[in-house]
Image (cartoon, one colour):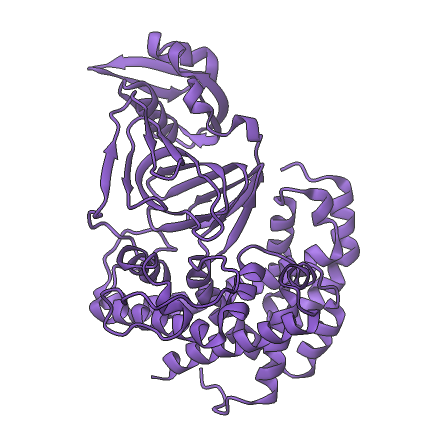
Length: 318
Length: 172
């Protein structure tokens, strides 16, 4: 990809001007934009390059404080950085310190980060739940069979399972959650996150969350849900009142495979469920207590067959 | 997928316009396929009434092309990194980075941070408000007590700095 070298190329200036306006929710001149694109194929290429750069920058932007301009206080000592940037960012670096900066790097490379994190680790056994109070009044309710690393008051990493986050709004310090390899940035929010292998399910009941600000940058408002499966996101409405219903002993499936259902049931009940292979996909809502008391209750609830095997239960299509 | 008839009608009414936009946007021969993909996205939109708005559809078409460009870039860099790849990760997750890749990402973060620092606090805050919080330029102008053209100018300046930072890295 060999672009023109001159920084002040008119095409590039125009591409930047269009990128600045098409993003605006009020933008309406799509026909004018189309006409500009049609005038020269180089226009679309320049616009693509600008948009690509901007999306990468979003990861850094999302972590910025929503600052209101203010007189500079005396500069704080720079954090342990080889090359701290100059200006206003430098003086606000304390909060953007090691962990967050490192996480930003990871967000940009979209890598799966498996190294243990530095903060406190909270872990639940299947069938168990745990409420974690964060220092600033926010709280996290951790579902069964889940693992969460808390990295300070405004950052956490969901390593497995599911959790409901009730986050106190602080415009200057957005709460940053890494769910596996995907970053979520909240804007004062109640949201539920479920991580199962490569499947990620985020549902927002209050406020808003930005999923993967560096890549897809999907903004979820209250009553919206994003599910990533097979590397693709699907956004759908969700009943805000139903978000986090697992805390009240209920779990729901929507077009879920038997293996996913078995894994979720194991996590919620503490019993061991496995699934026979197959393509069956089911939707339904289940009271966890009923299944814990009698796993065969699933037969009626989901229209599957359930049989004991060893210490656990096998779910099969009927 | 229960799409209301009105969304489908609205889409069909805009289809030629959307195809023309997709072609202009660089879709080429894939325009028809991309229009189909666009329809699937629209049909899955959380608010079908909003999605029936032509502006929403065109924005979604633009988004589709942005995603496509990113996917192509990522596929290209993944192919390059394949020799050191670990197998078996999801297709939107790149293989674990070599030291080189991680260094490149760190340089990128640093370059973007520098670009934002060069902007000054007001412009940086405006960009964040616009891109991350999704505020309209008009609302931002009111919030910051500046004119709409100042917001536009700040955004353009910010975008130019960010694009320059990115290009400087790509050319290294």
